[in-house]
Amino acid sequence: MLRKLFVLLYQPYKWLFLIPVILIFTFFFGIAAVVVSSLINQKAGSYVGGALWSRFIIMLTPVFVKVKGLDNIKKGTSYIIIPNHQSFYDVFAIYGWLGLDIKWLMKKELAKIPGVGFGSRKVGHIFLDRSNQQAAVKSYKEAKRKLVNGTSVVIFPEGTRSKNGKLLPFKRGAYKLAFDLNLPLLPVTINGSKNILPAGSFSKILPGNISITVHPPIEIKDLNDKHISEIMDKSKGIISSALE
Image (cartoon, rainbow, N blue to C red):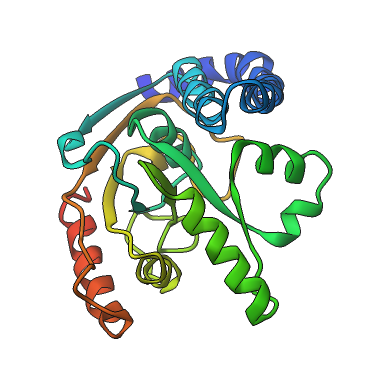
């Protein structure tokens, strides 16, 4: 009964304030990130347009975030971060609380969207073009050049958001990239985000709690891509071990 009353009372705040402010300030932080990237560097731009933007939205919702395992992240090391995926709020949690300079892999088609392509390139996000071998090699060279000195990339191995919180089948993309770039994998388990914004609806936002568990990295230096299936199973087990 109390929860239903709380949900009812939250609706005016959500529709009249939270959602409009999220839309306005997403635009504002996007512009700020491009300006800071141009004037200072891409790492500073990513911090403004990623970490600060995410913490701002988390604070306004509000969501309380708890993180454990940050000591598993080695300063100056770049990772392929592989979290489970329950909600768009996973992005805010990762951006705002892992303390890493994070880039995203984006489809080349997004580069053609006015503003999106320009802004994403300015802050250092990576567009992957697999239309032919030459384009793919060029994309991987760009990724290898950018993912150094602690700059990391996030790839959700499930490929989409889970509607019930259970892990979906993992796809090979993140693992193939890890082997191609010779970067360690960083498994991350996120709990609680599905209760804040379930998959499939932007309008069902509610306050809540998110917990993040950062697991020890999986090193692949002495392995090759024949071990991808083995590493996929291992990482899935690790992420699942902390899933509520």
